[in-house]
Every structure is written in C-alpha cells, then in structure tokens.
Length: 455
Ligand code: ATP
Image (cartoon, rainbow, N blue to C red; front, side, top):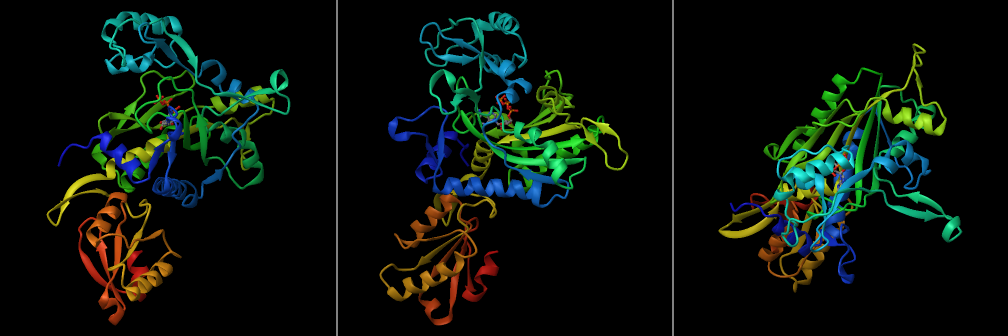
C-alpha cells in the first residue's frame, strides 16, 4: 500500500464534506475550519465516546460546561496574561512570521517554553544559520520577541473606552478550577475525584498550520483529577495508562502512538508527558498532554479571588489544597488522528478504493439503505420503509443515485460500516442484503432482525 499522505486525507475531508476551510467563500481565514455534515457527526461521536469514558462510566467523575467569558482576573491568576506567549520572529525579506521554539525544535534544539526573550534569542543566534524562512528561503530574521497568545475583546454596553477588556479562553480548563468549590458544595464529590469538560479555547497562534493540527479556535477535552497532596504519583501513572489505552480501544493503531516526556517543566509542574501521534506527512507530534500540576491552580485562584479553595476531608477534618492531575486534548487534533488512522487505500473485488476504517462507534453514518433500482416504485417504497425504521435507532442515509458499486464506494469513503440493499427477493421474503465495509462480504438478513444485527 502506498504511504499515506496528509494531502489525500485533507482532500477527502473536503470532497466528502467532513471539513471546510473557515470563511471559504471570502478566501479562507487562517487557522479556522468548519466541520461539515459528516465531520460534525464524527466530531460528536468522538465527544460522546470521550464523555462516556470519563463521566458515564465513572463514579469518581462529574461533568461541567462553564462559560467562555470569565472575570479577566482569572487569566492573571493562571499566568496567561503575563506568561502565555510564544517567541516570534519575522523574516526581514518577506515578513513571514516564524515561531522560533518550533523552528529550533525542527533542527533538534530543545527550547524551553518558559525561556526569557534574552535566552531564546541567544539560542536563536547560535543556530540562525540553520533556519530558513519557510516562504522565501532566506536566513535573515529579526530578534525574537514574546508574543502573547490570548485573544482580547470588549464586553459591555459602552463602545470604546468604557467597555471592559475581556479575554477569550486560552485554555478551556480554567472553568474547572473556578467551579471546584461549587461542585464540592453541591454534589457528593469527595477527593479523590475528577471533573471533565469539553470547551472552546482561542489562541493567537503565530503560524496556524497543518490543517486541524494547529488552529486559532479549538475545542479541548479536559479532565482535572483532584488528589490529596503527595498522593499524585500512582494516580498519575494510572491516568496516563488509561488515556493511551483509550486511543487504542477506539481504533488507533498502537504503533502510531508514543510517549514523550517534557524535559523542561514549568516551575509548578512535577511531571508532564505527551501522547504523540504519527501524523501522515508530518510525523510524530503532540496529540494530548498529561500534566501533574501540584496545588498551583487552586492556590493561585484562592490568592487572586480571596476565596479559600481548600478542601476539608469530611471524615478526618484534614484541610488542604488538592493537587491536580490534568489531561488535555484538542478535539481537532484528535479528529485528525482518527481520520488519518482510518484512511486506507486498498482493493476490493479487484477494484481500487479509498475507505475510512473507522470503528462503528465513530463512523458518521452507521448504515446506508439502497433500493436496487431507482425506477422501481415497489423497491423504493420498501427501501423507504426500512430506512424509516432504522433512522429511529442510528444515523442512516438513503441513497438511490447511481449503480450499486458507486454507492458502495461513496459509503466506503465516509466510513459507513454497513450498506443495506433492497432487491426483488426482499419483496418476496422480507430479507435484505447487508454488505460489510471492510470485507465486502454480503449476507441476507430478515428485516425484523436488522436492527439487532446492525447493533
Ligand atoms: P503546542 O506545544 O503544540 O503549542 P501546547 O503544549 O501549548 O501545544 P496545551 O496548552 O498543553 O498544548 O494544550 C493541550 C492540548 O490542546 C494539546 O495537546 C493539543 O491537543 C491541543 N492544542 C493546543 N493548541 C492547539 C492548537 N493551536 N490547535 C489545535 N489543538 C491545540
């Protein structure tokens, strides 16, 4: 099989209505993408599967959906207004902006996220002759300066000076810290326990790139697990293991995943690991971050809000600020990893095809229903009847357009696990043909048993 190319995956995503460039008809907006009809199904299925794992199946987890806008002091407490920045430099020839730490990384030089401007410039200076402008190829850059990633806007009824400056969230997880006390006070949650949330985040990324990998608007699925101080190590290992295994369980090939430990930790973190995915054409890169954050977040918000966020153990009366173990993944990156892993070019019945081998749980459409012929009213009516029955249970599609082979190919490309064909035998014996996406094998199934069979 030919090596997978990201270009082919992006092209399928657009051709089949999974992902479109944001503001496409206006020429496209950098770092923005819209999920089309099949894309939104896949995205929702990913969210549902993640939620099921972290909320539905867990007695020690609760869910949350916090507001996008927060008191601006939240971002001071979290360190985002001062420290959430990337080192930016500009090509003196064509003004293309580069992210210096990522360019250094590409040539094998590790740059610490928290380096000062002087430190990063010293490193940049040392290796400048190896870094080319991605647009014009020249090697003449300005000094790097810290570029804050928070997106600012105004809120309030008064235009101009009176309007309050507010920030779009740089990460979704802050909402969890802000609600820790609310949740402890209003539910039966007791440490150790976790809060899960899926929320939007916005980052003024210097160079949004690689399709869904780095965007300026993103959605993050986060869990924050609260433990007693110093009782983090074992749980951290368990959480790491669970997150890695979840990807494998959901269908990602294990050889396309690997661990990477952060060398340079931010001062409060006691450990940080990434799960990396082997993206076609781009190679291994961060998919999800798993961080051991000590008591930093709740301590900072206690300090800045003036509200004590200590936890009191109801049994022992012990009072402490819980430590936090965090998992955070961008859903766009997750989407891209699953799409890439499922993308397959193979041959079936001597014919070349493209097929998305998504798990049944993730596939946008679970079953497609075809009348064998479009111009036979009896077949069409029967197929409609089957479609109307199935659609109550699962996402279905009705298709009577083109020959059956073409309809199969169309469904293969969007990853539909089963196609059901209504033919002349159906009118006699109430059975249909069910075709399997991966093997192409077909079997006859009674209409009355169809729902169970497909499940
Ligand atoms: P990077 O080093 O790639 O900029 P990060 O270390 O800043 O990422 P975190 O702040 O830890 O990332 O965010 C957690 C997760 O959110 C990442 O693992 C990734 O899946 C996702 N993520 C972060 N930034 C983006 C982005 N610009 N576009 C898409 N997903 C993102």
